[in-house]
Length: 263
Image (cartoon, rainbow, N blue to C red; front, side, top):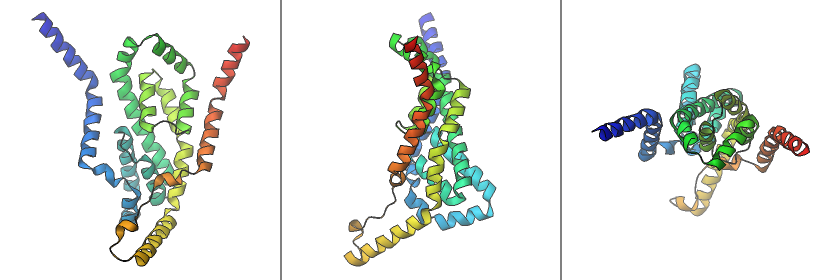
């Protein structure tokens, strides 16, 4: 009986610890299963842009709050479409308001993931970590600000992974929030600025689509695909700029390393 009771208490403890993470996974899985994440595309934005603009003109503050909440939810649930939402923010609100709203929404969503990961899994991982992982945690913790700022500035890893890993590696809440907020500003405003000029891109794409249909013939939609790819806005120049900013953030780490070598 004691063994059964201990197992029941252990299971209840795990459920109490993991329920926020399980809830996030369940809600995210439900949204993906229903296909609602497919609405986070530039095609849907282009098709409904006039309706959205009319709504925003009459209720700007409410629209901004709703946008920030939607962005935070998308990040917290690790749904695809973060770049599309940033572009949409610049497109619907202008690059300044849209960029600020996107930074706030992304930071809030990232905080949710961090807090859940830190409270649900960090202690378990630390207790079961081997020597290599323990050394990695200690090394990461010593220069957490520089490392996290680099990971935010340079989009090498998926955004959801960079949200999750610091919570598992024992990074402080303040360091995480500051590096997230500062690190996503350059890329976010770059995409918001691109979204601010999306009207001309949409019109050019629609004109090219209609010209293709006129040449091929009506009904030949397969030969004239219509789509807007947000990855096309990630130009080599933008990537180079983000990499340069990321390398600057690693200068303190390099200085410490050379000082240790000299000592």
